[in-house]
Image 1 (cartoon, rainbow, N blue to C red):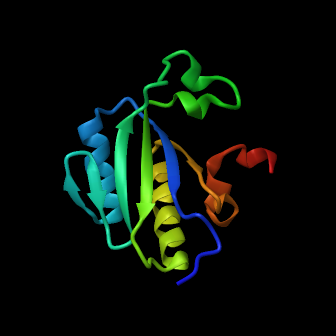
Image 2: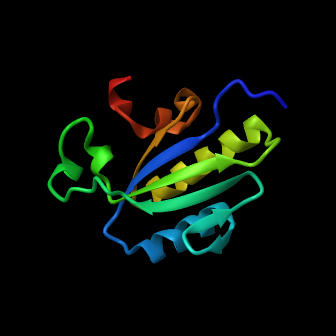
Length: 125
């Protein structure tokens, strides 16, 4: 199926939780299987990384604070994924993260399709 978007998604995620806890939490939200720091669902492969640009000071200030969050998720769609279903999974993941108190900002081609437009500068849009 031809997609309107490049479906690759990056989610910047901030929490003081340890990475293993983040992997466990995300895997529950997306109902995926875990291998190390990778979560596989029917729609996507989710890779969870420590953010090399993490800054305790910068993570809570300025419009680009999300760039300094502790973690980021690289989310690759499965081959032949249904675009609407994939975007729905990303939407659900973001909502679950926010509802659980995490700071999360999505960066992707389809931010306008996501709840709160992916979370970036939502109040200003």
